[in-house]
Length: 180
Length: 184
Image (cartoon, rainbow over the protein chains, first blue to last red):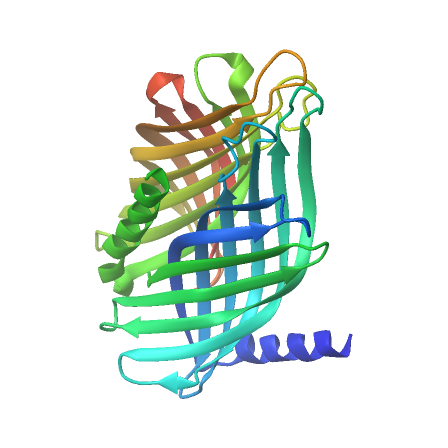
C-alpha cells in the first residue's frame, strides 16, 4: 500500500508540474507471450505500442503511460488445439535517462501494468473449444533507446520489454516506435 | 509476410505523420464495433475497439483537416458459442479528410471520409464432432465515412464522440463503430 502511494505521488508530481514536455510515440514489433507454466500456451505475433512520454525540462526522469496491444496468432493453424490470443495492457512507466547525448538517449524503465487477455482454443475430436478471458497484472520493465534525427523525426527502439504477471503470465516484445 | 506488411504499414503511417507536429492533435479512445465479415449474417460479430486519431489542420480556419486513424477491434460475441465459436480481430488504418460542418461555442460537428485498409485475423474454433477449426486471415479495403462531435472543454482537454462511422469494404465487408476519444 505504501509503495502504491509513493508511486501515485510520483505520477501526480509529474502530471501537475508546469514544466512538462509531452511527446507521443507509436510503433509495432514482435511479441511473445507465455500464458502458463507448462509452455504449451506460448504464443507469438505482432505487438502495437502507443506511448505518451512526459519529461520534466532539464531532468532525466520521465513518466510514460503506455498502451500495448498484442495479436498472437502463432498457433492459429495448429492441427491440434489451434489457439489465438490477444492481450491489451496499460502501464504508467517511470524511466530514467542514464545516457543522454544530442542524438541518443538510453533509459531503463519500470512500472506496474494491468491487462486483459482474451483467446480461443479450438475443439478437437475429444475436447470442446474453450475461451480465455483473464485480467492480468504485474510488473513491466525494459530498456528504451531514443534516436533523435531532428526535432520532428525521432525513433524509439524497445529491444527488451518484459511483463511479469499473475498466474504465470509473462510477455516480452521488441518494438520500434516513431514520434508522432 | 503478412505481419511484416502490417508492421511496415504502421511504420510508414507513423513516418508520414511526423513532419506535421506543429499543428496537430492526438486522440485516443475506444468503443463498440460491429463487423459483417462477409455477406453471411452467420459471420456478424461485435465487440470492443481501441481507436487512435491524429488531427492535422490543413486550412487556416481549421475547417478542413486530415485525420489519419487507426482502429483495432476485438470481436468476441461468438467466442462462447457452443457450436463453431469464433474470435476475430481487425486492424485498420484510414487516412480520412474531415470538414467542420457546424460550430456552436465549444461544440464542433465534423463529417469525415476516406479510403481504408483492414486486416482481419481470427480463429473459428470448430467443435468436437462436426466442424474443424478454421483460420481467418484476409485483407479488406474500401471507403470509410462518419460523423464526429468534439467538445472543446479547455485548451488541453477535448472529448470527441463518434456516434457512427462505417467502413464499406470489398466482399461484403462492413464495419460499424461508435467510440469516445480523449485528446492526449
